[in-house]
Length: 268
Image (spheres, rainbow, N blue to C red):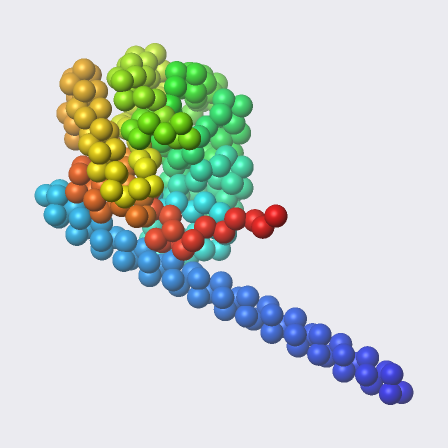
């Protein structure tokens, strides 16, 4: 009898513990969601202020909320706060998330893209709005052919420029930027060239030089193609430097940790 009572008591204790853990997990998720929405509003305000300092209308600046490693639950909360433009670095992750989220999201792929990942990306993300990381003719050609094969409308792309000279960074060298842009514009009818992107360096003090380099590349590209600079996006600036980037001409900032908090990588 005592053994039976003990077992029942133990089970009640386990159930209570499980319910408590579940409640705490849900509360933590809600708290995280609330923090992300609040952070988004703060970022929007800071973007507007930086745009005003640079003498440009705030609506000329696009905020790409970079949700790498973040759960769908948190992304959905930021979506429900009114944001629509999100960015991801990895094909598998963006495909998995796109399937679980509303189709009016505008997804930007901002990571290094390999040729064998082009088809899964385009097939798995019907609402892919832009690829920001075209860095050579091979990947441009692959995207162009696959967009045509799948019957998609022309895909917006940015040419990624390695402005820091770091081997660890993807991107065409500044000296080769114009040639790649011409290739996309003239030989890839299923791609719509929209501008340039750079990552810059993690060292804040060296970042302005990287931004200046990208702006110079844009001037050369626009002069050669005969288009106004206002029609050529500059995607530069992340959580640590987006205000400076805007003041130096950025029209597209990619902000992750300032909105979502530190990234969460699986532990080995």
